[in-house]
Structures are given as C-alpha cells and as structure tokens.
Length: 342
Image 1 (tube, helix red, strand yellow):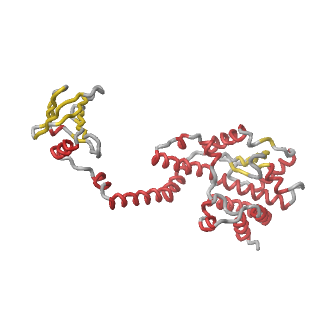
Image 2 (tube, helix red, strand yellow; image 1 turned 180 degrees about the vertical axis):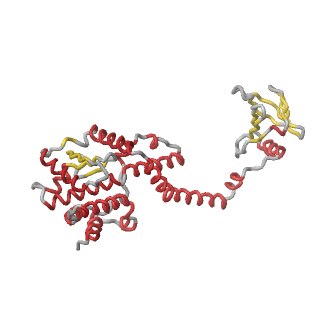
Image 3 (cartoon, one colour; image 1 turned 45 degrees about the vertical axis):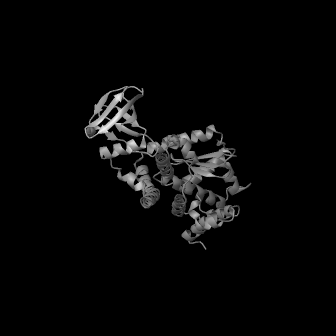
C-alpha cells in the first residue's frame, strides 16, 4: 500500500487515496474508491525524481510519489523502457545518434535544400516574380532608398538603350534609373524583370564626362550581368532557399518568426550566392559577345573596384565561398580569360 494522488480526468481536483497493487489489479481507497485491472492500466515513461504516473482506461490517472512504489508498479505492469530511452542511457549509442543527426543535417543543407530549391523555384509561376518585384520596389521607394534620378531624360534614354542592346530576346526587362545616396554605386535585379541602376553607379563609371564607348561597354556589361540574374530567376531561387533554411531552423529551434516574415522584406535582404554571381557573370558575358560589346571595359571596371576592396584574410583564402560576391580581381580575370583577352 502507498499514498497516491488521483485525478478523475474530468476536473483538476486532486484526490488523496491509498493505492494497493496486486496480481488481481489496483485498488484505490480514500477520497475515491475504485478498482482497475492491470490489463487496462499503463505506466508513463518514468523520470528520475518525478512521480510515477498511471493512466487508466476511463481517462483517469494516478500519481505515485514514492520511488520504491513506482519501481514496484513498473515490475508489476511489465513496463519495458522504449528503445529511444535505452539508447539515451548509453553514452556510446547517444553519441552515435548525435553524429548521425549532425550528418543528416549537413546532408540536408548541402544536398537536400539546394535540390528542393531548384524544384520549387522551377514550379513557381511568373506571376510570383511579378508580385515579388513590385512589392520589393514599393518597399525600397517607401523607405526612400530609391529616389527619382537626377539625370536628364536624354541620359536616362541613353542608359535604357544600353539595356536594350544586351537584353535577351525571351525576357522582358525595364530599366529604372534611380538616385540612391544610401545605397551608393550599385545595380540590382528585381524578380519581375526590373533592373535598378543607381545614379551613383553611372557617375562612378562615366565620371564628369559623357557616355564614351568604353563607359557604355562597362555599363552594358553591368546591365547584362543583372539581366542574367533575371533570366536565371536567381531572386526566386534565393528566396526559396532562404525560406527552406528558415523552415529548417524553425523545425529545430521552434521559432517560426523568420518563416512568417513577409517575402518582399526578406527579398530585400537576400544576397545571391557566389555561384549565382558567377553564373550571372557568365550569362552577361554571353550576351555581350552575342551583341558584339567589348568585354575589356567591364573587366577594367572590376579591377578598379578591386583596388578599394580590403586585402584577403586567411579565412577568405581558405574559405572563399563564405563571401557572397567573388573578389573583383577574380571576376576581371575570369572575364578576360573567357573573352580571350590577355
């Protein structure tokens, strides 16, 4: 006989009872008087220092605080620890499970998510690209990150003509020239086919002069690169990958805030991977060669940009993939080599 606490499964009221266990079953006497057969009684997984919990077939339960009585009940009911419990009590098995879990997560991140990303992104309709692009542009303008261009209509028309000179025939693109003091010299491709070119980038290329052939070729190369991002749907692929990574993180740590974040806001913070940047470089190079645009000025521009980049640290050299964009000197070298320029 031992003291136990009975809950009838209907209310939260605690009933103190004397529990007697034997081969005939379980007998409760005191505030409640009930009898239960052993066959319909289950014992919850025991935890050290916690009461043993008995569940009955009518939905009631009984908590037994005495460790000795709990052990006796486990023997009487023929309780056997689940395989997972027996494994976690053995250091070797627990370590093996940990190693397998780490390998599974690594394989999921390295192979599973990229494969799923490509399949999901390929199945997304183009309407998704248009919606995401419009939302991202509206958000950038709402935050005053993109302001009306300070260039004349004639200059903007010249820049639009440069995009037309490298635009792939199967993709509709539009150029948005914008003043962006907070962003600086930059160009970005939105999923809907809009390519944003900042005044600051144009001024960095042409200086105070006019659109020379060399400057036009360099800007055309930048636009061809961004057209590659649009043509290869890098935004949709990056957004899908980021969402899958957020979902995996939420599954592991229970925080779904990143998954619930608005896609346009997430899109604004995305950066293309090194592989995507090099892929866009190759696509842009192909467009330039197809339209007879010299590649040298773009390679020279990358070399100029590389002069302002910090020197590579040991981690950049040994793990260059950590960086989002390839180094400018590396991109210039790849362009010259691909175009056959010494």
